[in-house]
Length: 111
Length: 113
Image 1 (cartoon, rainbow over the protein chains, first blue to last red):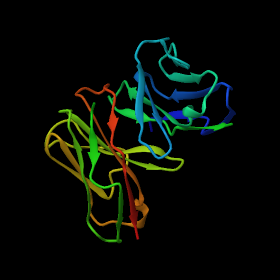
Image 2: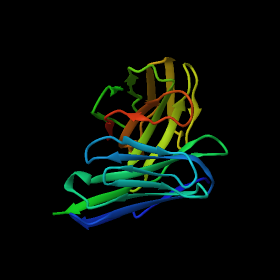
Image 3: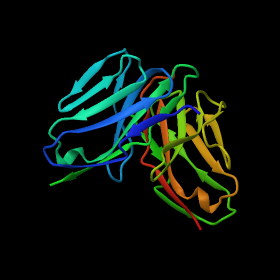
Image 4: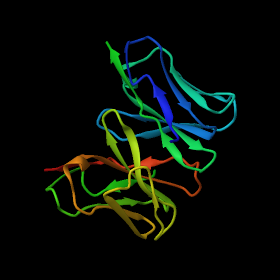
């Protein structure tokens, strides 16, 4: 079936190091959304990418949408303890207008 | 700010019981969703609704039903609860259209004994 694969599942980084999570779809996406879920919290919308090759920045976070609109990435520069949580991508499938969530990447920061 | 309120934060029920999970949003959103979240499996869509009295099956609808009698309220029903339905249940809402950001409630952690 249609899937949005997200890797890695877990990532441990030293505070100050960079972090990247990747999202790959088997089909072309209309857009992709990114969410963050803090431990014990609920997913919170971060950003949406729509255009092929689009790059957006939010402070230390950089979001990219691939040229073929089948993959995306979230990169965090110089991680801080406040970045701890699980990051989800969610792709809107072209063919049936359904949003599919990736399984998420859990980020743990070592002090 | 959008507020999505789930009726219970924690719930414990017994096998075979009929369980109701309620969700209310206060921003006049057309779309509402029910997910369950399990470790290693991410968010899985159970049911969604794009309008009052309208419902669509998600990826894992078996064992569940939903009701949307009013625009602001979307209820998830476990017809006969089973232990494999122990999970975190998340409700979300969004504006009309398929590409709008979703706003989530705090979740209900349901345990079926």
